[in-house]
Image 1 (cartoon, helix red, strand yellow):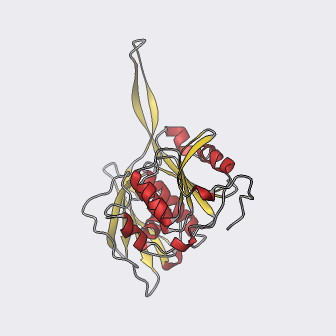
Image 2: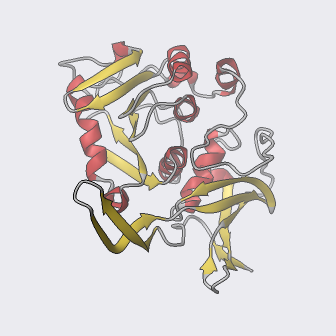
Length: 295
């Protein structure tokens, strides 16, 4: 049975659930039991025109954002306007509760996927990003906005404050301690949109999809901020929509650094407190400049 939700709507389903917990303190020998709030993780299958495209493990909610973001960052569409409608295909679980774990995307008349989807032979985990990308050169050849990745300037003081800006918006993490977050901010450090998910790649797809519903890429005047490490896949997703900079709380990978260097993206990692490390294109960080200025 399908429940039509034309245009764009919020995803459905539980974001958190309550479970029993036994807390053990070895030092004091005390054990205590009480309910705990944990993050929900469920599969989501994305279909295009009824044909299965990919299945990922995600936190329910903002499923339409995820679908749009995934299609964009895979290069399968260039704009959310290529999508005519989306719908949740509902089912019921063993306890009779309705589930919303399938999203079917309908393209506009005459529309088609702009690239051949990578074959998915198994379910992606919530930690899986661009599964199947062979090399940095493969990603570079697929980019539409490489020419737009060199414009925005940002103050180092703004960069240093971005992790706190992100953390203050992590409402699900506050309740569970288990959600990754991704945010898009402008070069003045003002938050535009934030999304949370059990998977860091899902959070990025959701935040990109959320913005793309209102604004077509490239997003050349915004910065992607993530609560996780900076992986190759996150740099790739940012590059696919023309983001000029990525700021990560965690560590970068070698391939993430290589890709960022080649596509002209500023890559910041270990952003904590008043310090951070820049691994690619530090020239975009200009102290004392008007941070809204573009080159």
